[in-house]
Length: 391
Image (tube, rainbow, N blue to C red; front, top):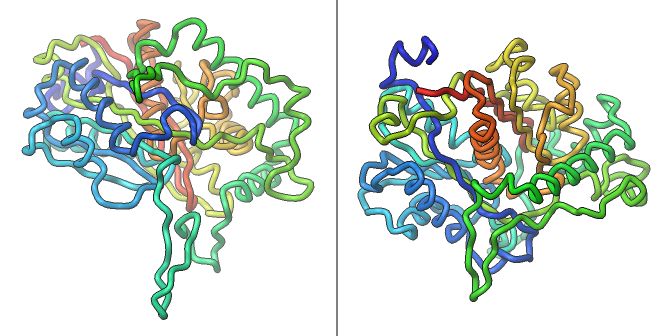
C-alpha cells in the first residue's frame, strides 16, 4: 500500500466501481432513450457494485454537452429510484465533461466535502434538442452548436480544428488512417474476447436487449479507409474514416475515500493521484489534453503509465498530442477507442475511467499508473492520473 494512502485514508480519493452502457451509433439501438434514461440504470449498477446504499451518496455529478439544460444528474438519479435527499450537479466542459465530473468528485473527497460520490456523464445525440437564438423580432435562429471562443480569437468547427492540428503538427493522412484502423481492430478483438463484458450495463428497449457496442467495423481495411474523401477541407486529410462517429451512451463511477472504501468492503481500486484542466489555442483545440497531462501528470508519470486512455475524437488530434508528450501510440487505447466505439460527448471522459478501471482490475496491476486524457471544444483539455492499488 502506498505511503500517500497511509498518510490520510479519510481524504485519499479512490474509484471503486465503474460501469457504462453499450455505446451505439446515433439513430441506432439506443435512439429511443432520453439522456437521463441512459444514465439512470448505470447509476443504479454502480451503486450496487460498490455496495452503496443510495441515501449515503453525498452527490451525483454528471457531464453533458448537447442537452437542453436543466439538471441531468438530478433527473437521472431520481429516475434511478434514489431518495430525494440525494442532490445532483450537471457540468459542461463539452467533450471533457464526464472526466471533469470524476475529477470534481475526487477533489471533493480530498477536500472532505463529502464521503461518497457517483460521477460520470451521458449523451443522447439521437434525442438532443434543437437549439435556437431568439432574435430581436422574436423569431428563432437555430444553431448546431454553442460558441466556444470569440470570433477574433477563432472558434472553428471540430473537423476544421482537426485539420488545423493535422497541418500544424504534420500528421499525414496515412498515419491517421493507420491509427483509425488500429482502433477498429483492437475494439473488435476486445469485444470478441469478452473484455467489455464486466463494464457494460445491458438495456432492454421495447423487448429488445442491447448489450454490446456497435461501432467497431470488423471489415475495416487500409484500402477502404483510403477511399474516404476529405470531410472538412478540400485537399485535407481528415475524413469520416479517421474521425469518431456520433453516438449515444452513458458511464459512471463511484468515488469515495480509501477509508470509506474499506468500510464498503472494497479491497482495491483506482486511487486518485492528480488531475486538472488546461487551455490552448482554440484553433488547435485537439492538443488540450497534452497541455493538461504535462501540467498535472508530468513527463515522468506519462512515461511510466501502464494504462492510458485517450478520447479518440479525431486521429489527428490524438497523434499530435501523443507526439507532444513523447508517447508511442501503441501504448494508448489498447482495446480500441472512440474512432471505433464512438464518442457520446458528455459521457466519453467517464468511459475512459471505466475502461481504465476494468483493464487494471483484470490485469491485477497493483501499483501501475493509469492516465485518462481528453481534449475538448474551445481549446480545453483534461487529464486525470490514477494508481491501481490494493488497500
